[in-house]
Image 1: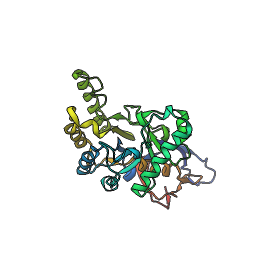
Image 2: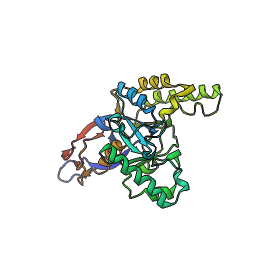
Image 3: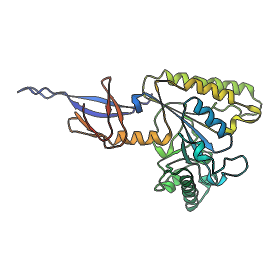
Amino acid sequence: MFLFVLSLSINFAKAQAGSTIATTGTPIEMLFPQGKSKALILSFDDGRIADRDLVKLMNEYDLVGTYHLNSNKLGTKDYLTKEEIKNLYKGHEVSCHTANHPALTSLSKIDVIYEVVEDRKELERLMSYPVRGLSYPFGNTNDFVVEAITGLGIECARTVGDTYNFNLPADFLRWQPTIHLFGKTNYIPNDTANDRRELTNFYQLPTDFLNAKSLALYYVWGHSWEYDGPSNKWAEVEKFFKMVAKNQDICYTTQIELVDYINGYKNLKFSVDKTLVTNRSSINIFLKINGKVFTIEAGSTKQL
């Protein structure tokens, strides 16, 4: 299991004349907000009208989501209207999904930039706050696309390369989620045996997540429109939400909130002997040292 640790040397020397100064390397472990060791991100793409039902259900279970929207599709058939999204997604995060949902890896650099900037600009107008995240259409990205979006104000971008683990992202702009909601059920038409296997595997992950002994991020993604139609999965969606909702051990977070938190942790300023730490961010940061949890309040310096 991935452990997000900042290797720091803490001096435990006693100030005694003639004694040898002994130093011990003690790991300082990041905890999630509120001092949690587990975090959950729920992320959904496209902005289809089925988001109305999905947001309503999430609100009933006090869950938060990150919703990636195509601004040029809003107001067209089967998509939400521009007028409703600010109120609908209140308490959730709205993020980019490009203006028109093209495969970015097939575009020129200027077209990649256009798709991201125009989407970001319109969503910011509609939501009245800076939009700083992205999910790649079809999950398609490469070094060229990442280079093209660098400097456009996008601070994190999700792929669809499921890891089936609970690791933190190694690269915010190549963020791989844990799993698609319900795995690959219905990927093979009329294959009920495959659907049963995929559901079994999918439902094992929440158990593994809740039993994890080290820092664990569970990132689930999908599309609300997948739960409509002949395969109606809304009962399964609610079953999953019941499994992960209202658990005091879990930090429920949006994608950009976690990015801000991790960046705040990385920007902590420690004294040379590591007995003092300054948090220059506007977010309370939580640490664990030798089993003891410390809260480093926003804008404060704390004695460890």
